[in-house]
Image (cartoon, rainbow, N blue to C red; front, side):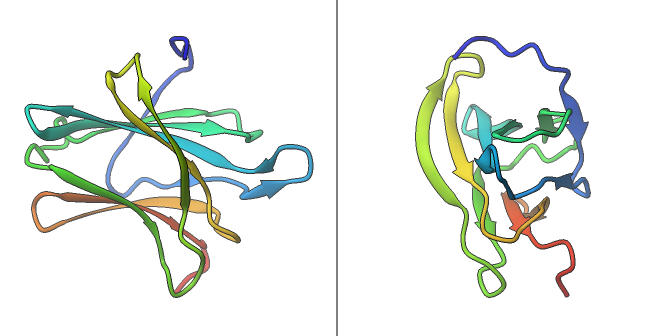
Length: 133
């Protein structure tokens, strides 16, 4: 994959990424998620939109800058009892970030990506419906 030229927006843990899960011309939305590990810990997570009309298409969650230096696990999930699970349909080696990239279809009816950090070492990337309880 060629190097990306997009402006990258920095995220924090309470940031949200909004999207439209399906459009008539592009089909189901996708995200490419590249967690970058260094010495066994996740340093940054790059997120890119695919098959979407939105202008902003590149994001980074810099865990090192946020002081979350002990993050060594992550999960891509959804509120399972409210919607389907996201479908990671392809993994590939991202030459730009030197990491495994997870290409993910969004679950039905969802419209937001949220982030959770727990247990002092675990990051959750969660697809949700914005009107959830």
